[in-house]
Length: 110
Length: 115
Image 1 (tube, rainbow over the protein chains, first blue to last red):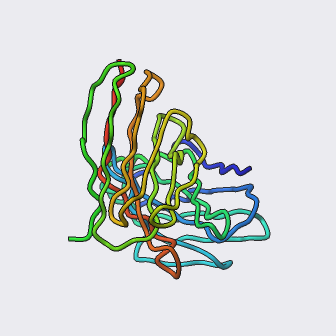
Image 2 (image 1 turned 90 degrees about the horizontal axis):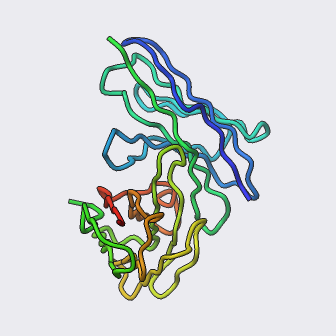
Image 3 (image 1 turned 90 degrees about the vertical axis):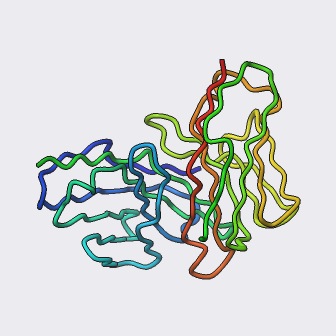
């Protein structure tokens, strides 16, 4: 089986930094992904970590520690348009299945 | 434009009336999958397909069927819908291997209500 834990909600002000943690328990691990979903919209891919360390893509960064079964998504210089739900997802094994966490709703206030 | 197209986007039906949600992708992706999304539960995988004629159950397959007769199409069939299948459904696709295997492209979603 597998499980992914992430906080349900985070609120922050414009310009702030938000870190969304994701811990996972899974049989077989081939990488951790992050997806963004605006209300009523389709999830869109943000980043992927297969190896330990930090991946940076503009204002967003993602980190992975395989030994700790832990990763996080870092949102910097928050903007109102970053208000959305963010999902971590684990690629569980070599059959390419992805399992998603329940999602973290980020609300950005002016 | 590279995309995953699902239809219908919205559907209200009644218990027991068979329905099909279509999904088509134009990216030549090997892998396709269906997810349902319910409040507080995230995205749960219903079925997936590694390639034509190859399908397998996800985490919540009960009450659903799928088929993969062509690479581009992966319809979701509800033979006898029940109210607990009221949900938002997403079809997604990606490449079967390489770095592209880590990037799912989702359709716009199909909101289904079963009365």
